[in-house]
Amino acid sequence: MSALLSGTGLVRNYGATPALRGIDLEVAAGEIVAVTGPSGCGKSTLLHCLAGILRVDGGTVTYRDQDIGLWSEAARSRLRRTEFGVLFQFGQLVPELTAVENVALPLLLAGTGRREARQTALDWLGRLGVAESAEQRPGTMSGGQQQRCATARALVTEPRVLFADEPTGALDVLTGEQVLGQIVRVAREQGTAVVLVTHESSVAAYADREVALRDGVVDPTGLGLAR
Amino acid sequence: MSTAHVLLGLLAAGPRHGYDLKRAHDDRLPRAKPLAYGQVYATLGRLERDGLVTEAGQDREGGPDRTSYEITEEGRRHLDAWLSAVDPPAPYVTSELFSKVVVALLAADAGRARDYLVAQRAAHMSRMRELTTAKTEPGAGVGDVVAADYAIGHLEADLRWLQTTLARVADLQKEVTS
Image 1: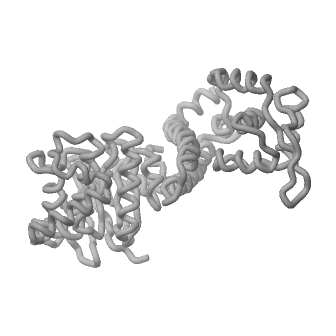
Image 2: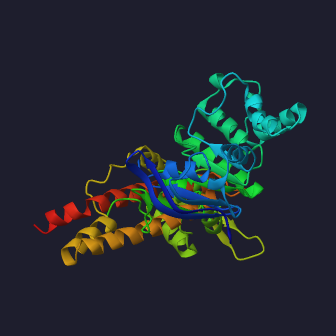
């Protein structure tokens, strides 16, 4: 399989502190890759760099054979609205909007008509099993309902790549499992590649393969721990 | 796990013959090692000897005669006692994984112990991926999910131990070889 998304020699520093120290990683279309490792190993930074949210200090991020580091901020932002979906642990829904308005937002930003965007958003809420929460605001929803809603919003544009950073980290085990199962099921149905950041083995087991990080580099042992 | 108790549990709902018991056991405990027919009949023989089951009759459905068994009152009391008994947590820490790490340090060095931990971790992750795929497959029954969850939970505990032990191998070596 050829890579849909790849990072080559990725370096990223926070001031004098190196977070990524030369990481190579490839993701094929439709592949689910878990990025694992202990706290502070650089996995979230790697996700942000691959998604074009953070710029790298060295190396290249290539998406469909194009170096997105050369793109303007506006172009990368457009990429994130159309080709990429992003899902975090929490706090990503707009509190003033209802669930259906939250999910419709990326479609409206991409120029879809209001009625169509609303209907598509409702369909996605149904696929994620939270159609009954469509008119609720995030503050009145449970953590699991919010994360399903956020998942629907991340997938509503049918992205080629979903970036998920500890997407079930704030949920109890059973709810987390349901949300994760739905993310994986929908991603497989859509042929969406997933970059799944987690520190839990049981979450990484949902992926096709695992890339373990240790101190900003890929750990070939897969353990992600200092040796 | 006691096969005898599972068979008593299956018979608590009504008489069954050996073939039925084998099928019901394998259906209700997915991912357990399938029960061999010989084991079913040997276990029924012991249960009958101990007065916990008794023959309920013979039937024939286009084949040889088959003996049905039913649970006795004594069998019900025995089953009830088993269901009420809490298993004591294991008093000793014994594990092939733990022993192997210590022996690797005694007989070789920290590198050997690390190599083993890394290889074992890969095998555990591979099995955990298989089980996760099985439980998330469309059509997986609740029994499949619960069985997979049990195995995944134990693999996860092992994995956590493998990772923390890897971080402690150097210190453990000092203690073991001092």
